[in-house]
Image (cartoon, rainbow, N blue to C red; front, side, top):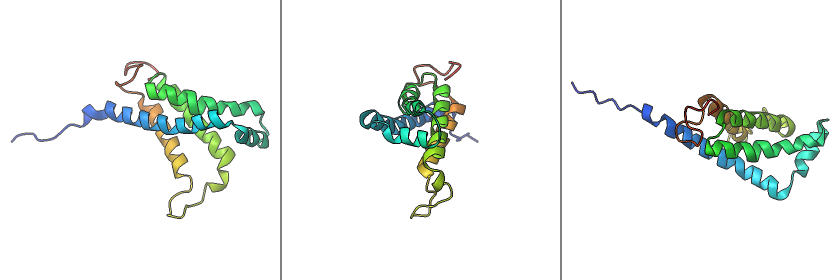
Length: 141
């Protein structure tokens, strides 16, 4: 009998590329918005939490630099961890009141932030894959 099983193993690197590109582009929209409009809101949130205002500038690392590294597949695991930290900080500073809320459609109020966090965590574990500037063999890719 002939084996008709199709192996999807060959598509793992393509899946990593898709995850990298989508996650990076979506986060970059937030970063570019902050580059163009400023981070006054974030400075206020950081100060309200009792932290030095200079910490607010970390948003540029988390929403501009890290997504660019992820997009091109350079230091992908480290950049994804930066994104994980950025999302945790955003959840704690801005969204704590929404942790146990549902939206009008019955979904979690923070499902978008949860998807960003989960995608970044998955990418930190998976690495960039073959279709990246850093290549699949790079230690941090």
